[in-house]
Image (cartoon, rainbow, N blue to C red; front, side, top):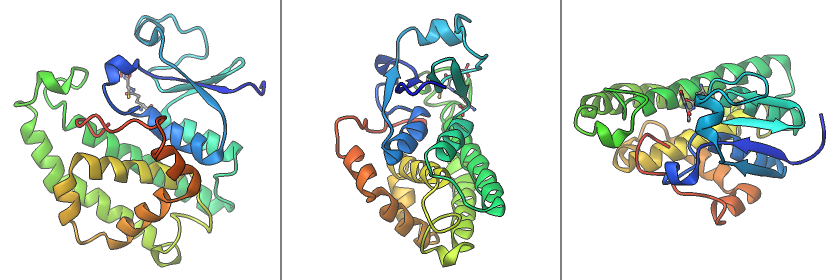
Length: 232
Ligand SMILES: N[C@@H](CCC(=O)N[C@@H](CS)C(=O)NCC(=O)O)C(=O)O
């Protein structure tokens, strides 16, 4: 693998009209690691929907590429980058628990996103605002608290919830959880604010987002605010 900057492929900024969506998970790992990367937004539809992508087959962006190596699937990309740049568990048990939690984080964001697209999940939220309301209500009432409660429990299982999800230092899975907590807070501020059953998770979010490199990123113009729908 060459040592040039990573390229991170994702939808065009015009299409996004807000945050970097799932690419934000990847950006948090790269930002915390202090690794340089370059966004690529050109021709994304032709590359991935139109079948013009020439690298290793990828179903959908985000995708990272450097030299002739490329990788897609957000959770896998973050794990790969975490391992490469020292944001990775140090024991075998923690490695598997991080994997388990990373998968649950991605289940959560996928369910949350789908609740905004209950009629047609590949179409814009704006085309189904009314039809998707019941799915959102179900997500807010049933699924969101269940997932968040689970994350609170998982956090508590390691050092009483005062540190990280696994081990004694930040890993890629903390950054993944941080992102979905921020997405939850941005998307459902009233429900998040009223949730009193996850105090450790709320403190953890504050702690993580104050890490110097992340704080610098969130305060910079490289960061883009959440779009206001689809938890993205
Ligand atoms: N499980 C994949 C989902 C990828 C995904 O759904 N990407 C969206 C953008 S966030 C996309 O462009 N999907 C196109 C499609 O599903 O056809 C991941 O986490 O990377």
